[in-house]
Image (cartoon, rainbow, N blue to C red; front, side, top):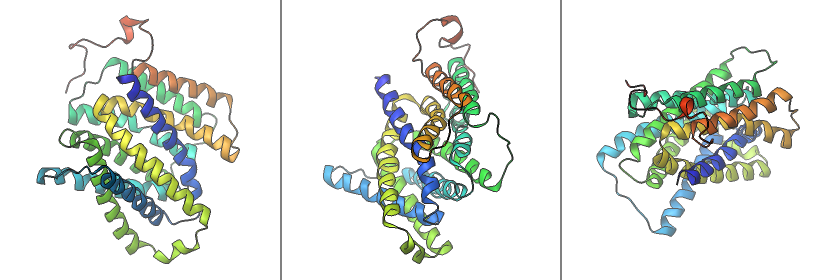
Length: 305
């Protein structure tokens, strides 16, 4: 049932939107690559423990490794390194704005590589949501491109690419196995890269609360939410799932207000409503009024390559 998938994706986005705030806190206590390696290590242990307890296993074929290795390299190593390095100099709301480009990027990639239709409803919903994102984090603020913003842009691009690769991978193996193997491979790559780039001894200076926060966010946001997300991509498709990513700036704004006292403006509130409306349009959660404009297009109306 699609409604169940939408609810689970919304839960994932709530925790991932919080990750912008928690990530900004954690990069002040850990170096970026070591932080990523720590979180991925605990995520991998969580997934391996689940396999042992459930006694479920899946044998990989050579063709699966052709997607798993690039997925670990692009979707984990490049994505996590770019994200946490960028978060050292970019605030959470700006990072969430850049990451909100992922839905449009994913829709285009899904159209190009997965032949998923680019429907009128999805296109209208995406445009509305992006306008809402601009209201949330862009109205009344000066904008200039910094190196940190470029890194967050790379994180967005690699995340969108990983959605496409995961969608293709779950056509051959179950979502849990795809999540587990890609996480473990990416974790191994991240640990190797971190030990060469950053001094491992630096982690001993981090306070106990930072360790607890890093482990908790790894298990919940990367472990549980990553598993749910990849499972629902298989159910509803990459392009529709990616539309939910537009909710991240709204969540980042809300969590920032609650935890850090970041002020909330009326343009941000209006933009948040527009984001939610855009997601509802794209995912067909709105009533069927205006059917002549927002209904699913016929075969002739679909944009084909």
